[in-house]
Length: 230
Ligand code: PGA
Image 1 (tube, rainbow, N blue to C red):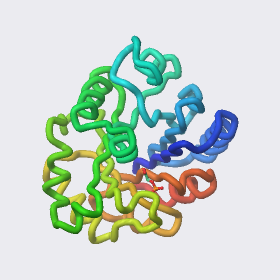
Image 2 (tube, rainbow, N blue to C red):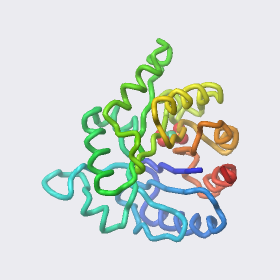
Image 3 (tube, rainbow, N blue to C red):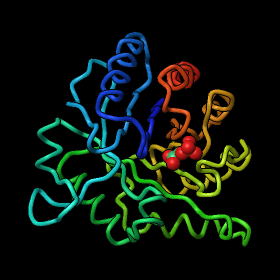
Image 4 (spheres, rainbow, N blue to C red):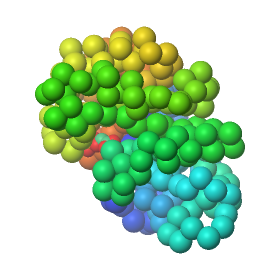
């Protein structure tokens, strides 16, 4: 299982470090691959024994004049090997379009980083029955055979709402995405300590991307334990 926590704009540098140290020590016997994605100002060196640290955003450049962004040079210094691309909050609030997400995917995978590429439909798309068509369009141009690509399916209507997709919905959509050629596929959207086990038991689910329920280390660890050995 791949189990990733997206802190969004939560946790400070101090609290992130304490969290990471505690979680890393808890993970000694874990068989899952565990990641956290703290805010950029809180990102510690990625040199824990079991836990991996990634970033929620970066720009597709080594360095240069891109105010407010970080590039590969800054990530390399921190030994960061994983980056989230295309989270719905970045697409929606910060207007990152399809083209930019694709550029980021290409740039960071070419540089040898692992890209967690997020896709997901909004409520209107779901209700109009166009989910699969929409998701297929979000995959266009991605090299799905790239070993460093992890797709996270996160229906926007399930993010931060406390209402995850049903197991049936997850199963159907994940099967569809796998039939499109997606190799490694996470589910995200209101995953918590109450539903993580059953979500991770769905056959086509290779892991979860957790927002709110990753903020407390004990909750996140409970979710990791629920991932078992798959
Ligand atoms: P949530 O967020 O778990 O708080 O719904 C998931 C995400 O946005 O990755």
